[in-house]
Length: 138
Image (tube, rainbow, N blue to C red; front, side, top):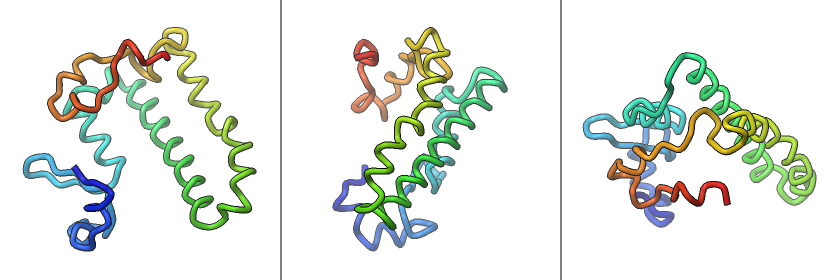
C-alpha cells in the first residue's frame, strides 16, 4: 500500500517505468498505468466481462472516465481559479452518460454492466476496502 507520504518519495517514483504512479505488483508481474492494472485485475478476478458486448461496454466506460479525468487534470493544472466554476456547471453533463448506463441495468439498481459481485469481497486484497453491498444504493 502506498501512502501519500511514501508516494511522494523520489525513490518510489524512480522505480516506476514512467517516473510516476500507478504501479502494481502481482507476484512476478509489475504493471504501470491505471488502465492496464484495471484490465489485469478484471481478468485475474473473473470480473472483466461475461461476453464481447460487456467487454466493449466496459472499455467505453473506462475511456469516458479517462476523458473526464483529462478534463479535470487540465482544470487543476492550467486554469483552476478561472475555470472551476465553468467545470462545476458542466459536470452534470459530463456525468450524464454514466447515469444513462446505470439506469439501463436492472432499472438503476445495479452497476453499469453487472449486478453486485459478492465474490469480489472474498478476494483477500479487497476485503478491507470493499463496499458493503447493502449500502450501495444509499
